[in-house]
Structures are given as structure tokens and as C-alpha cells.
Length: 402
Image (cartoon, rainbow, N blue to C red; front, top):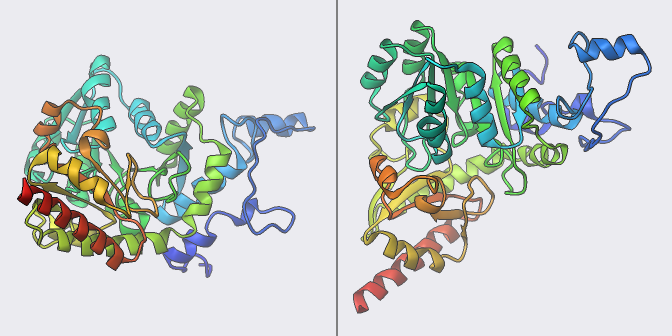
């Protein structure tokens, strides 16, 4: 075992997956925008084309900069194989379409990201694929539905935006006993705080746009796993259907990932402090954060996560009217539909995670119109707390005078 193999995850985030791609003494992986890669030797060209030999043929298939990104994610998740996509939703959809055929049965939870939920409610049923939704956290119900027949178990934990938790190890064991494939969206947790492959998952998905990149300037998705044949099947679907990551995006994501460990630890610290603070506010009805003792699945999160992450949400009294008053008063927060960036970002679920859903669909998932999602940045925690304090106090004062 090399010294690098024994290195901690922060070191791997900086150095991992890059050495083979450095050229001319450069210390950074170059952006290689070339669409095609040429060969003088016709036999070598053929061997690369059929996968017998390593190399690159065409940008829709593979690219050196993109591969460096994939290699880094593999190292952080402890995976043997990986492939990337143009967006996080491309990673989700390509994975599902790779393995599911008419007549298959998917077991999932109600609280998946809005775009993923639309795949389950709108697109997969068109292909005569049955999707069963279970209450998130109701492990007995999940296990019962798996026992009735399950081709693929799809989990997202923590969930977007209510940060609910599912026991990956328990549900994965049940799924494996039924011969089902286990897919886990690990975007919120990141490889710093959770590694689903060690808990029994077959495939781990990330929207790289979020915490992996961390600077809100590059779109991307990635899938990793330990079964190389499974990942190869996803790669084959992607190379034919064309949702390829751009090398410029790969470069930005690589650069962002060098500080992943530092960023996520600070974001986790800030989220815990903010969640604790919000619990004390008279204007706040409820706070959702797995690091709080009041979270219904706190103990599960404690057992499978190294940290509770930089995401939280809270519901305010007065619903959307209070949201309209509160969010513009925050000085150190972007009001935008993104998460995982170095800047704190806030927004109601109806315009961020679940804008694709109707108010009725959101209500069925327990997402009120007064729910605010917060992606904590890396600002000084005292400044974040002071910012939310002044905003809440200002809204309270306004309500009192009306």
C-alpha cells in the first residue's frame, strides 16, 4: 500500500486522480478541448476504439480532463469505476434508463429532489415501469415493498430539501437479498461526510454542480461504483445518448474539489450553528437538520455520516408571505436555485428544489410554501448568525406594527 493510499480524504481531494494527466511539468491538469484524438498506428487506434487499450478517440466518449475529474471522485468515494455527465440530472436519468425496462419495479422514497421525482411520476410510467413511493424513514414500509418485488432501490439521503435520512445499510441489505440494484444520491452529504458504497450501495450519484465544484460556475454529474460492469453499462448508455461532460466544466470541478474537505467542514459547522439558532426563533415553526437531537433520524445519521452537511431547511410562520419579507433582508445570502457553493444560498422549495411540482404535490411530500432551504457557505459563522438574526428581527418588527 502506497503512502497515497493511506492518505486522509483532504489530501486525496487535493492530489487524487491528477498525476497521470500532468504534462510539460505543469502542476495543474490542463483543459484539453480537442474533440478528436489521432493515431498513426491503425492497430493501436483500433485497440483503443474497442477498449482493449487505454486512450481517447472522440470527445463524446472520453476526454483526458474529464477522466481526471472522474478519477478524483472515484478516489474520494472509494470506488473502482466512474463516469461523468453534463449535469446531475443527466447522471440520475441515464442511470435509471440504463437498467430499467418495461415491467420493472422501482422502490423509492417520497422525498427525492423534484427533478428526480418527475422522472418517477412522469417519465418512467410512460415506459410501463412501476414506481412505488415509501415514506422516507419508514424502513419497515420500504422493506415490505422490496419484498413484493424490486428491480432497483433508489435512495437520496439526506433528502432535498427537508434533509430526511434513510438507513442505507439496512435498506441495501434488504434490496440485495431480493436481487435489486441499490442507487444512492449522495449530493447533499458529499464524499467527505458519507460513503454509500461502504454501506452496501451499488451506484453512487452526485450532482457535481453542487458541493463537488463548490463555486456555482460549472454544471456536471458523476456516477461511481465498485462493479465495473455496472458502471460500464451506464457509460455505454451515456456515450450513445450524448450527455457528455464538457472539459472546461471538468477543469473547474477539479479545481473546486481541491478545497472540498475544507469547504464541507466549514459548511457543516455553519449549518449546525444556524440550525441551533433558528430553533430559538419565535418566527420559525420547525427546523430540519440531521445534526439536531430533535431530528427524527438523528441516530441513523450519526451512525452512517461523518458530519451532517451544510444543508438545512426551516419553515416560517405566515408561509410564503413571511418568506417574501424575510429573504430580501438577508445580506450575506444569494436568493437563487443552487446549493453547495462557497456563498450561503437561500430559497423556498417552490422555486428551487421542487419548482417542477404543483403545490399539491409539494404538500403531499410535506413541503410547505413557507419552507426555506439554506445552503450554508463558508462565511464566518458569527456573520451568518448575525445576518439571520437581523432579518428575523426586522420581519418580526414589521409584523408587530401591522
